[in-house]
Image 1 (cartoon, rainbow, N blue to C red):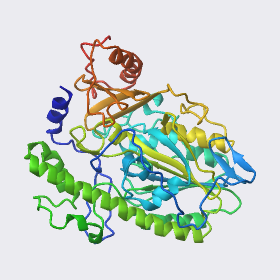
Image 2 (cartoon, rainbow, N blue to C red; image 1 turned 180 degrees about the horizontal axis):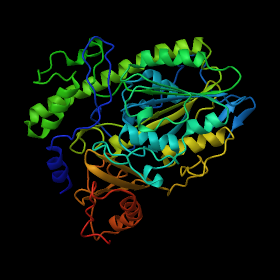
Image 3 (cartoon, helix red, strand yellow; image 1 turned 60 degrees about the horizontal axis):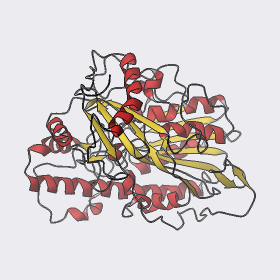
Image 4 (cartoon, helix red, strand yellow; image 1 turned 45 degrees about the vertical axis):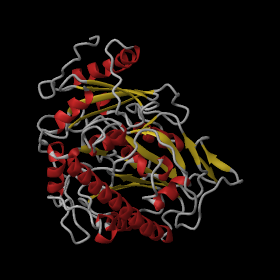
Length: 490
């Protein structure tokens, strides 16, 4: 029932959405739009933790000196003065070696091995504007009385004025704040960049260029106060278009009728997928996977090179670097390719970790949401957490039975999800469909356990229903009509 529902919906053409601009830096036409991800295992995965140094020449270790920190996040010596955010668009968690990947990102894998890693992180949503807004404000959109839609921009869809963003708090505390964004959704026009003194946008620029531009601004930051810099990378986003020398695996493969280096043709192929024969479907998936993984390798290589330059400039000596992704990507695990469709693991699970030269490597396996990042860092830096924040201070603010929530109004309309441990329920407003999964027995969430009379379904529905009612009261249901499940308690 569930599979049929998803495949039928997938045959529809995509609505027109605001396209984030993209530039080409490799000599090929790039296009604009959202991204995709490789096939493979999703959900909670295990892998070999990488080891080694990272290009700084100063890998962190457990150390024996006097440390500072909170228990989970500890440093050998003083806490770093500055904070640097690297948020990466469209990056699947299962590409990392730690989560079963095949070393597509040796540089980032190495930094993760040296840092404090949060191993079970849910993003608040499944697309950039919603995901970055809730992460940077420490609360879900619906807790602020709104949820931004991907299409249909009429109406009040901007971040409410009473939302307090991390950059605002840091600026009020005397920090110099800098933003370099490469996605059109993370910019001043959408009200999601409050608090940045320097607020720059390079639509779709590659990692090397944006790191050069941001480095110049950081070098000019006042020396008498700390700085908070946020760099948002667009590289893995569609179209997957690395230089040709990264695409050797495409040699000898069957020619397809689309130029997948172009966003519009990639999207045409994606939208036609369910009308294709099985062999063409498999070849399309294989080539998009190759292109995506090559794009990630290219990004990782450029980041590695620029990291050395930042380090030589002294910008990493006294800096806490925070890595996170704004969402993942789907490769037809649930009938869709790219993102902003579902809240399953391939789109909703992300990697997040902290790195510094003097950080003590550690990990936290408890249930984490990206809304926890802001309050955890504010607490670490002895800054009062705003009352608007609903995220938890890690690790003490969460328990193993914590209930985590996510929502999106995107390509499948409004969808909401609650996760309790490994168990999750999804509710689609437009159809009234309900899906129940358990990653403990089905890591890819492809087995629908929905039973309107079953204990698991009823328990999860009672947890999700108040969130649905909250969203129904806050949102314009003329624009986003809700179909309540007829066979579940209302």
